[in-house]
Amino acid sequence: MCFFLLIIDEKIVQPKVEAGACSQIIDKCDLINCSSVCKTQDYEGGLVSWKCDEFNLCTCFFNYVPSKHPNQPTRRCEIGLGPCSTATPECNSKCAIKFKGVGTCLDSTILKAKMCICDYNSS
Image (cartoon, rainbow, N blue to C red; front, top):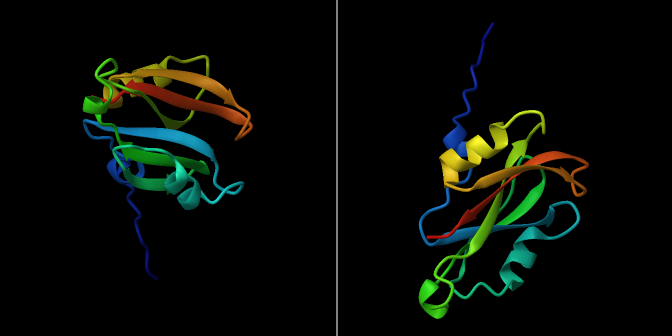
């Protein structure tokens, strides 16, 4: 009899956003072609990648070029951090630690569940 142990590292599951990079949640992956939609967005710094995450959210990752926006050196970005409960401040804490942003537990009409959405600045 064989047993397998599956270890999932949070770093593998959770996308990492680098300085100057930004992400934007678009829609549910089963409602759109995530790759095509991300490729048609007007990301001046260029699309880096796209992902349909474990919550079925299509997220586009792109470069933000501050030199093209001298009056706006940073851009507000967003990323989903998973399910949450409004009764705990854990969403905001997780966002602050991972992205130095503000996390809000929202009722997602897309997912019909509460989802932690992290708003952060590109840098």
